[in-house]
Image (cartoon, rainbow, N blue to C red; front, side):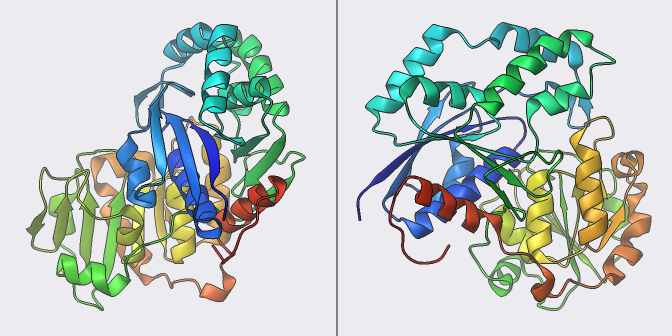
Length: 370
């Protein structure tokens, strides 16, 4: 089987885009094991290594700045405007150098998880581009025009470049339905170890109700740890809550990088509590377990994600203020009483469809099933 080389431009706005990109790359490698990816991003390389192992080359590059965040819950519009104004329009010399680089690397296409610079690079290099999104930056910035009218020319710049992708792929939950070449169910990474293996490693009994508390890969100090001990019948896995792995009664406190693959922790749990984000939703959806969710109230994507959760997942909404001050623990009995979803009602992983579509468009033979 001939080797396949693909460039992947991945937004570093949170880890959700990187998680979706990692799932797509995992799917492509399953169909076509000789694939090699050149990943351009500022998301740290370990994030992709956790999913892919090897088979990729990392290029640290600011391909997409997204929205500047003051906190995981609050945007900084002035800083966003200043940063985007420095980066747009894309400098021709930068596009030319990157296009020459992807050609020298032997890449046959450019994949973009909402990083429009990759579309510009692909066009300059004469390569096909694949835009993979559940929102685009023009749509996000439109939601802030009343607060920051100077976003208008940036929105138009984004809109033009997103429209110039060779292939447009949307992944549910989609924020704005647009004409596209493919629309898929949620895209998520797959667990690497069984529920039983992970619980054995964490010393959690096989049938003990277990809840994963997550900020989507962002370090966070939680305010409800003492209150959780009032629910000794449940075990709580809390990544990013300690400097080293610690067991404190019914709390499994883990560092930000614990050595456990995040999807493994999620699929070993019976419920998830956390901040709404694409990858957390997609992985919780495919696990079929209840989700206690808090939204970023001012981020335009949040309403679409919350609506998908309400319609398709057993769930309990948690006000952001309660998530931050720790009073969300009062929702635990309701959350733990919700049933898991029957696996027959869960859509296939969209990563499989995307991988197959990309390979078909490139005329690359592929075997197996992702």
